[in-house]
Each structure stands twice: as C-alpha cells, then as structure tokens.
Length: 588
Image 1: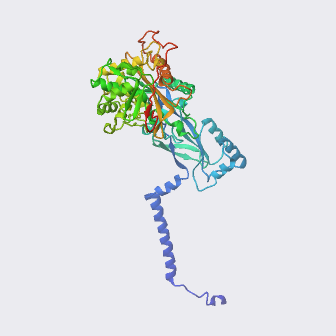
Image 2 (image 1 turned 135 degrees about the vertical axis):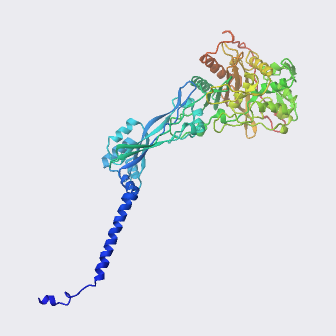
Image 3 (image 1 turned 60 degrees about the vertical axis):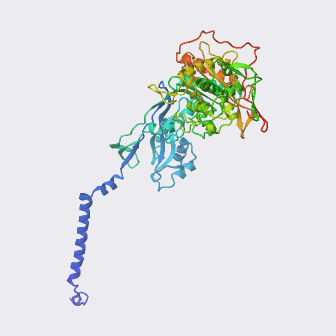
C-alpha cells in the first residue's frame, strides 16, 4: 500500500485535455466520413477513373484509306492490313534468349531492342512498324509480357513504276506526300474510330466494353487513267529512250472529246512500293512540272491565228527564198530551202522562214491572244500539285525577232500536258477543253479559241505533215488517218541555245476524220545519232496510237494499206532551228 502513496501515482490530468483529444479524434472521423461520402456518393468519377485506369483502355480503330483505281476499276493504290509491334517499357519482361529471338524477328540488333525499352518512364514505344500479319503472329508466339500488336495499313501500288508519277506516294502513316495521294489527301484519308476494352495485367484484351467512335473509311478515287493505255505508253516510251540513249522523256494521252488524261508516263521512273530513299530526279512528274521550248509543234498556232485573222488561206503562197530570213542582227534559216511554198507546205515541211513571215504579218497581240486562249502561260488546272504554268511574255515586250521565233516555239516554254491540251482546239470545233486526271461522267464545255472552220483546215494540214514530203511520215498508223506536228528544239544552256543538245517532240491526233486521241511525246536529249522529232518521237506516237485505238475499239477510217512511206533513197525532210547572230553566235 506504500506504493499508492507515491506522488507520481497521485497525479491528476486536467479534464479539458482528454476532452480536447476526444474532440480531435471525432473531427478526424467526421472528416473521413464526409470525404468517403463525397467520393463514393457525390463525386465518384475520381475513384472510378483511378480504378478503370488499372484495367480499362481506349483503343484506336484505324480507318481504311480510300482506294485509287483507273477508269475501269483496276486498282492503282490500295491499303493492306499490317501489324506494328510496340512495347510498354515498364511492363517489358524478356530474358536474354527471348530478346535475341524477338530482335531476329524484327530484324534489329538485340542491343538496339534493349535500348528502346530501357526507359521505363515511357508507356509506348514502337519496336517495328508494318509487319505482315503472318510475321507478326510469330512475335505473338514468343509470349513476352509488355509486347503488343497494333493494326495499321500500308499503301501498296499494284502497277508500280508504270503509273508512279501520277499516283505519288504516302508516308509510313499513310499521309499523302506526292502526286494525287497528296492532292486528294482529304478525300482519301479516313477518320479513325475508338473503342473501350478491358485488359488483364499482361495487356491482353479480355472484353469489349463499348464503341466510342465509329471509324469513317476514306472515299475511293476513280481516275481518268486507262491502265491498258498507260502500260502501252510506258512501254513505248521506255523503248524509245533506250534506243536513242536519251536523258529523259514523257508522254501524255488525252481523250480528244472529254479532255481526260488516259495515260501519262515519265522516265526515269521509280518504284513507289520501295520505302527506301527516292531520288527527286526520278520521282518528278516531268509531263506536268518540267517546262521546255516546244519548237515547231507551235507552228500550227501561228497559221491558225493568221487564218482566223483573214491574212492567209491554205493555198496562199509564202516566199521563203533561199531559206534565210534576216531580222536585225539575227538570221533565221531553213534546213531545206524551199522557195515559194503554200501555207499547207509551211506546216508539212516545217519551214521556219515561212512560219516567221506569217507571224510577222500579224499584230503581236493577235498571236499572243491565240497562245493565251490555247492555254499557254496559265496553269492547266488538272488538280496535280506543282503543275507548271509555262512562260508566255506579254506581247508589249516582244521584239520582231522574238515574235518570229515564237511562231516556231522558241522564246516560249510549256509543259507536255499544256502542249497536248492545246491541240484540243484542232481536234474539235476550235474550243480548248479543260483537262482532268479524274474520270468524267458528264460532258464539259470548252473555251472558244479559233473558229470551227480554222480547226478543220489546220487538222487537214497536220495530216499532210505525216505523209511523204512532210516531216512526220513515221507517225502514220495502219488503218487510221492521223495528223500531227514534229518539233526539234535546241535546249537552253546558261542563257544560250546549246549546239548539240535537243528536245525532240511530236504532237498528233487520231483518227483525223473524228479525233478520239491526242498524244504528245517528248524525248529529252537523244544521243544515239538521231535527234529530229520525226525520227525520235513520231514512232512512239505511232505505236501508242495504233494499239490504243484498237484497245478502245475505235473503227478504222482508212484502208489497211494507207501507210505510204517515202522511198528509201528519198531525202529525209528535216527540221531544225538555227539562228545566226552576229554577236552571240548560234542561238538555236
């Protein structure tokens, strides 16, 4: 009992301290209760969100990019399903042997694979993009935690390099980069959807919960291109470049009635299915982007302007004398002096002096107006990105020598598509047709450029140009009447015309009785000994037109024995522009 007498045991704490402690505990309990009621009853989104983040995921559903087809439904660009392999570095678990096997399947070094998954703070990292499904299935068989597949689409081009310059390419994410893939990106691309799923701790989907957004597939695009004619054009252009050892070339085939581009080929070309580095020099659509001086293929326009102005008739005689015309300090020459020739023969024999005299007899504005109405100096509006407008200077700045040289295609620049389009004024009733790379379902109206009578007269002159005595007899086609004009122009080099570098061209139409096709051919720098348009470009026209008309089942409009070539010993009717200048020397 003595211990009870200890002073320590006899101590009494103040009552307010115990009550304060009890009050604090009660307030804490009330706060916890209020918080629980708030989170679980009034605002349970937070807890739900945290809970769902452990098992619920929103998965994106890819949208299918629209197909590109030719006018007959043949696929030119399609999207095929592929699988991309990705990893969550924080969940990645693989031993050394699994890492080696995975690296071998993905065709990467094991060290590189280890480096990619080393940063565990990242939630997503690609290991390999766009594997074939059967290849991706072998990755799944490794059963490595933290490695997943994602469905994607890869663009494939069945026609390869044959139509690559028109179609263009997409990048790895299926975004258009060039050509029509770029021009119609908004039309072709789809809008991805999404869905909510439940995944287990290994990331495997165990249940579909709901669809959040339905994917919108991209729309298909139907081109005006006829793949059958495209193959013909590409094949013949390639053969010509090999035969003449040319630097490059292009060909355009138009429907003379609708302005639709049935074929457009360029060389050199490239394979759009190869995802390696593509040389810009090979991927450029030269027929639309590159500009060149068209040479004598512009002579029919000078004649048409003079016919419409009433200055000449087809049988009007033009005195070309000895084949030389001096203007100021420059002299224009003909390869073959012809003396007195008719306007028809100016076109057939491709007389530079004759064309210059006809042009100089016109006001500069008259010639410029027809060039402008024929589409020169303006963008063709085909819808292709980066298409060239060419160069047509204002007539007020022309000097007499420039007006003369423009009559035979020097001092003016055009694209091959512009050149082909300009001939629609001769193939129809004198109207310039709008061109398109998309299939048309309704007829379109053209813009008047010359009178229907002048169009018919010039068309007959173009037919004379491919007969013996003209510059283009190698353009004749068995069973069909054809007409066209050759062109041979020196290339500009450092502001001067190079003496031995040429652009050879031919533009023509068939059948002349009711034109269905217009074909323009350009061969850049032929170097195998021949460089005249009639020898280099006209045979390409012949082969393409012959096969294309039969492919389209166009009725014959001439006897099958209609082709008349000059005798073997007959001199070749050549054309070439050579201007003697007393200061600068030859200027093409």
